[in-house]
Length: 476
Length: 97
Image 1 (cartoon, chains in turn yellow, orange):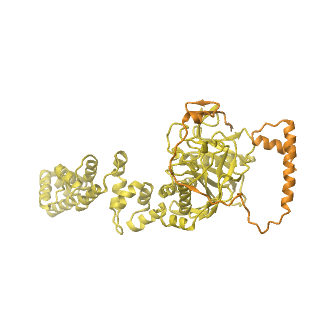
Image 2 (cartoon, rainbow over the protein chains, first blue to last red):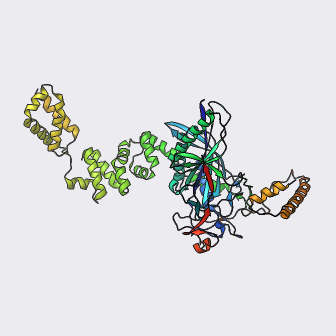
Image 3 (cartoon, chains in turn brown, yellow):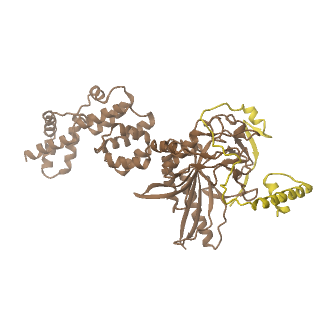
């Protein structure tokens, strides 16, 4: 039987605040373990939490970016469970009244714009970090706990189950990551855990409207892991169903080493979180003016930028996508590009050798790069020489024009001078000229090569071609 | 009615170890709450707005400024087992195919 894949994602994004969500401990990554903790985030008796205003603003900014409704009334709830990474034995989250609801994210799949519904976005606190003795939770004898991370503000973003392939799930998550980065609400480093994703996946007979039993996959800490785990899980579920089995509703963990999902059999009871309104925090009320101000100052979204690059700067989807994905390159581009013109040359320069050099050594002052573009357009040097000048720009304090002058790389622009060189080459190879005129046309390349060698590559290839053509046809 | 099983389940969720006498005691107490609750259910609240908090306070927000944390020794002092600055905890889940 053929099955449709149904995927929904839950994404946790750590917000880029200086201090934690409900206390003033620092959030900086990489501090020695358990040195950024206080009675509030450790859940010591008598401690009282206070909500970080910046975290609320970031959540609203993210919600607006995702086209959500911003709820002027939202409430915190207490979710009770025992787990070693949760020092209070409850998590402060938003259950019944989340801060944002009912939005969507748009993204491209092979040039087709797709939309995924965002069911909700809510604020909650991060748990501590567990380090497992064997590297995986599944077979570790013991685990180590660092509560520095406990209490960092998170937003949890939940999608509707309207993603239909593992690849689509990855493309969605890539776009969401970029959006959060553009909004400045998170550094979105998957390797440091500041962007994490759990996936729910089920199968249903192709075309059916009845959803199958879903399985939750955890521990997906890269885009690749997300796609691979979903592919594995879809195949596993399909196999179970084919053999007449039933899918068990459960949580599974992605095991990177074996490339499989493994069932996580909990030692305790089935979860019963006994969620109730958080007594230590009053409800959150947002002033409409405050929300309006955030809406007015919302940064440009990646998709808006993509379309702007295509429409106002004459770039292809490929070039625009590169610049949207690498905001630092885009900044250089926007500083140098001419709105309303075709900026393909600039984009290609940035994506080519410049990208490699800039990644190794950091970006050039945009104006130095502009100098190179200028002399390329003037025809002062050839495209090939441009590469050499670019390499020099990263090493030397001189401008592109000064480098060319110092190295004596100016193209021979005087047709008379170049014509002399062409004639000289043809005279020295008169026998080959005869053969060329006799029909051996492939010798053309040889003549061009000889001319270029004589002028050390400093000639405009087009001018060389024209002069050669003139000389070789003239006397026949 | 709250039966014996309910009490034992609640105790398990809250990690409480109850004696036979305590199970009976709490079953009695909890059931008396339900009796009071039933009385409250007779009040007409159709015109009263729901509340989640005892007092209607608007949330006071805190500026995003870093303050002082506890020294590591003080943090770890609360743990039965520590290792290299971390709390050490026993095996969490058992995995299977």
